[in-house]
Length: 117
Image (tube, rainbow, N blue to C red; front, side, top):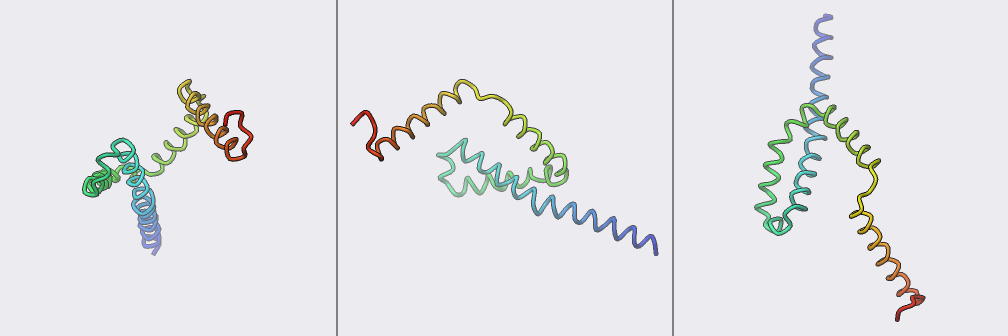
């Protein structure tokens, strides 16, 4: 009787682990990978067949994160924390300042308070 309880709990735990891995982690990993491919190759992304191929390729690779999802999620958490703590590069600061200046100019134009007309 105890053996059945232990086996039932063990199989239930394995099933829950695989359901989380293949039902939650893997599909989101595929979406993230396809979005990254679209960002890298926007001209190829106009072809639906190409995007479908990227999705199939990513789905084949999703087995890894689906099977080791606790380590995968922990790795993403740590990586995101490190990336958010790192200071911006000079390039990023320049882009950010340009975007702020454009936004300020746009708001001044809309409100009619800009120095340039």
